[in-house]
Length: 508
Image (cartoon, rainbow, N blue to C red; front, side, top):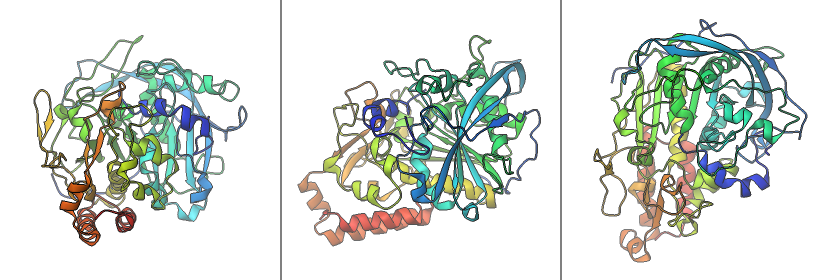
């Protein structure tokens, strides 16, 4: 289906609806930099096989579509095999996340990882981002790589995608009704014949073992002789739900990862253990435990707070020395960037130019009744991966962010300005100097449209009243962009691209 770091044209077009479905559900001072553990207690080092070849000649993954060599990176695939633990708890899990779990049954497994790394080892910055691949659509997707790949590449970090869950390996129905089953073994039976997964109760330990592999160096290691200093776990949507459970239950036991980015998590986590093993559910309102020794940055869109299917608001918690929460107005759980523009974005500014062509925004591949959200989600995601990496490397925490101005309801609502854009949260120029109403809700049509938010372009009369001249618009937009940059919620290259796009636009 896709080449390393890429996506075949047929999948990019005909499979796009399934891809976007995969994004659905499923205060102290600076903290000292966390030293990398040497050998986490109780975690087995799996057997690594590869680089993998054969079958149709390329890995199956929904990822970015450009050639990684174009941006100075390489891609390869490896198989991991070994024995994984499930986990159990003697008492019901509580919302404070301070759980005491223990290893339970074991089962053999064989899965795969994808490895993207700088082609020039001298450009490696020492950080590896390990993404829990999303399987909600019935096959593996890499939504965090797609959202934040430009910043990962600019910083010179490596990325590993882990097929941690059964559906991604074995196939079967994903969590979204009506989506055709997939899985690696179905996508390329010859290439993936050795793989087998014992079930998602074992996914947490499989992810730990993949994190351990990310630390390995040497001639035959997936990352070769790169000098790895820090390993950070990331996951978006359904994968973030699983990482909530991992952070509270497994990280204190295994100590594999040096930090976490939870992107669009829900109000709870996924079960610690599930059928056919004894079910151990996670309650709604579960927070990130406050006694962690590694930092956690949680990034939430407007949709994540107000959509009842995700329902993050009950789990909202204060910032602390090891925790930051960023809530971003004008963003949706999935958006136009994740449904199209992000596939081919190499950071050359074309994606930012498209943000100003709101008249071209449509209902997307799901045929939503209103144009889907074309907001700044991916731009803040770039800042999030940079901030987490800096937090771990230097001990400098990300900036504190105000919360969105919400009312708990039900239903949960967000206070809005006269143009319909949300108040509070991380302010960006696309919301503070708007040319459209950008919301995390307000869409109908297909069953997933509510998760893609909406874009309602301003009328010509409204634009003229707000920005009587092009110079007036550019001056205000640039000032807002610089403000967000100084606040730490945008990256310099992205601001440069935004300002260039604003200057080239016809606004005013």
